Structures are given as C-alpha cells and as structure tokens.
Image 1 (tube, rainbow, N blue to C red):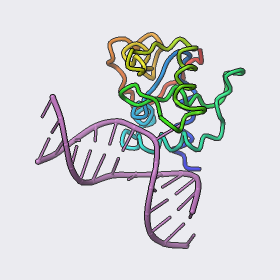
Image 2: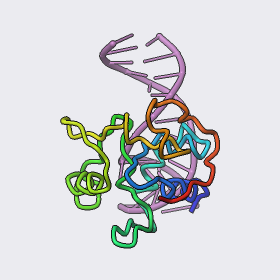
Image 3: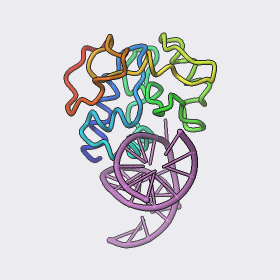
Image 4: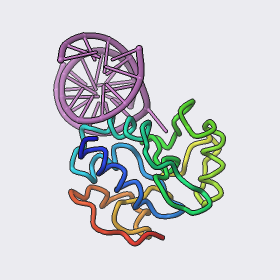
Length: 131
DNA sequence: GATATGACTTCAT
DNA sequence: TATGAAGCCATAT
C-alpha cells in the first residue's frame, strides 16, 4: 500500500458525524490536490469498511463529488443506500438528490466552520476530535 | 513483470 | 461561461 492511501483513509476517518467531504478536499488535506482521482480509487479498495453500528472504519459514504453527488454504482448498496446513511447522520440533501455541500461540507478543520465555504484549503490535516 | 483502467479535480483555451 | 485536456497512484488483468 502506498503512503497516499494511508493518508486518505486517515483523513476520511476524521470526517465528523453528519458531515461530508469531497475527493478533492481529501486530496488537498493530505497535500496532494492533483490526486483526487486516486482518493476515489483508494476508497474502492478500502481495507476497513464503515461499520454503522460501531461507527468505526472508513466512512466512504461521507466522501462525495465536489458537486455533492454520490458515487453511482460503486456505493455500498447503491447510491440510495449511501444517501439514506448520510441523511440518517443528519446530512441535508437538496431536491436534486445531492448533498447540501454549503452546509454539510467538512472544512477539514472544525465541524462548525462548514458555513461560508472558505478556509477549506488547509495544507495539513490537524488532529480532529472524532465526533 | 508490464499494460490498461479507474469513486476526480483543476487549469487552460 | 463552457468545453477540452492533463495529472497522478494503485489495483486488476
């Protein structure tokens, strides 16, 4: 496994409850904004699937497109299942079926700074208190 | 062991 | 503002 994937998993695990993060967001947090493509691929080979009961593992369902759309066909049980999980965690959805990135996009620093949209370009990923 | 493809994003024209 | 092309690592064949 490359060190890249390891950072991706670690970053995704830090995504707070009820928040989502885009592939580019994760890639940028680990210092590789050009590798957003591999972030998604890393999710494809996730060694630790998300456990909704224990709330442990890699919450791939919290990783969405920059538009707020979900990964169709490659989700756990389909985009519908993924959408249901996010909604169950408190993530708000638009009428278009996309995640409300404006309110639920994780800024990579604090769960309360999702509003405003700015300050999402952190070169480093500081330790975030998991939920 | 080598080649091809893939859950994307960003810059440039 | 919209469309096109480039970039990069890991996995699978």
